[in-house]
Image (tube, rainbow, N blue to C red; front, side, top):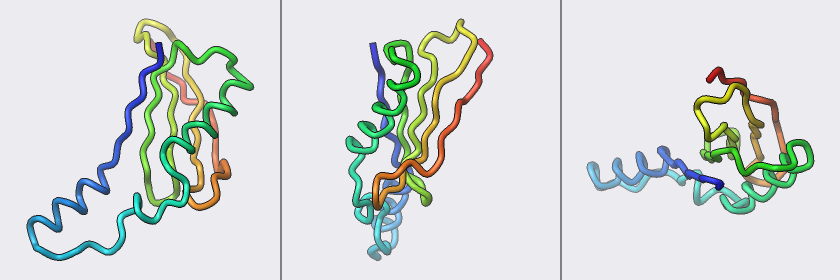
Amino acid sequence: MVSISVVGKRHEAARSEQQQTGSRPEKSLFLMSEIPCDEALKIARSNAESVYRDLSGYRISILLQDDGWHVDYELADPTLTGGGPHYVIDFNNGHIEGSGVQRFRG
């Protein structure tokens, strides 16, 4: 089972600011992004599957930040020790700008 969560605090903060002040924020990162969330997930998944093969034991989270889409794979079972891949994907061109493995102790 794969669990995916999409986090967009910056978008929520911009909407909240607009509601409170009546002003329109600059441009939301979501609007500036050339690469949609689902495409960033496909890019990360393709790379992760080439290394990990079976990703069914991971929970996936994605967060749009100033430097791109951050895609994290964390072990779904908290009793296991280990980690999963982490990617930063450029939101303009879809290139993997950074990657690594996050280690967690169960």
